Length: 440
Image 1 (tube, rainbow, N blue to C red):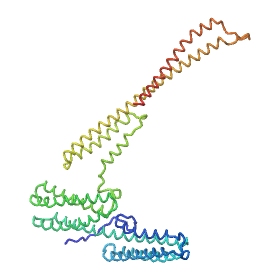
Image 2: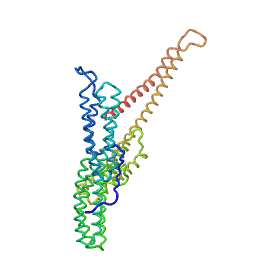
Image 3: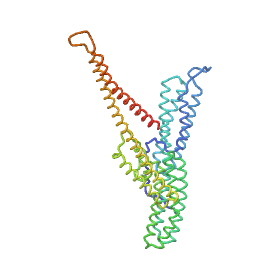
Image 4: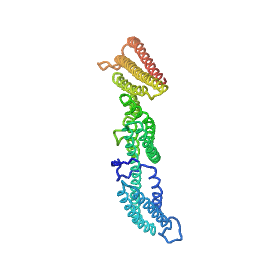
């Protein structure tokens, strides 16, 4: 059996208290519940017992002590079986034992006097320290499981290298048989790790990597056999190298998902996944414009260029050999629909701007005519007042001759009235036009 000799690098900070698996959460939950209940214990309601003493608090303190002892026993067993994290696990077990003893003393004193705020505060601090120590122990145990998975990955990588270095078909058959055995073990360990992962994205990445590994591993033997039969043909070498590369990438995907390393922590790997979806989301935000500030010269070229780049990416996806014909036709149809929808949206923006400009011109024309009518009314008022102004020699106020006044009024009033009516009619038409557009 192949063994892994090179050291295994774990991309995980042992000092971090980040919980990455559901198993750690399930193991911590009972202890957290017991500690929380103990902290919240108080002497409520009438009781025949001596005030300040709680039987329930003593029971909870014993349960916390028993749970801590169980963690210690399991931690010691894990530290005994572990090879890579033995020292860290032993130190974590000793820390749990120390914090557990502190918690036992503090909880016992609090159970004797649950009304004491000082003893309650002391127990709360001890409980926090105990939970931190237990969490670190569980995370280290989880890391030990990951180390075992990485060890399996290392063995599979070495078996894969052996398949690649096979010199004849019989040697290839023997080495591929060994590779298949290690693959079965790896698939079992990876499937169990996939179920324990807390992050849904990491679970999906693990499932995808396992699927890719299984798919390409089945082609590995055929591609290697074809290369051994025709070593001088460039196509067989390229095909074998491609399959090997796919298997190696799948192994790397399992390693990253097992350690719950996100794409933000690891710039390589799956950096290209989701680029098209992200571009679509960004484009969706860009097309939301303010109709009052829309400018065709400013927005149309940039939006069309951005959309064409997205369509180019979709076209590459459609032209892929692994894309089914019905999916390819649907992608092309959706690209054409999106392109037409953008043109319709831009046309709607332009029509809205044209209507706004026409409305502003009409409003300016109406304001001009209203000002002219106001000026005419003011002129008519001034003219009429001039007829009734007192004479400069101080004679009593006597208007001009009535015939002259009537003729002056008769000549100015109809013209002013006509302008006022015309102005009113145009104002009504403008209001009705705006209301009609609003209803549309």
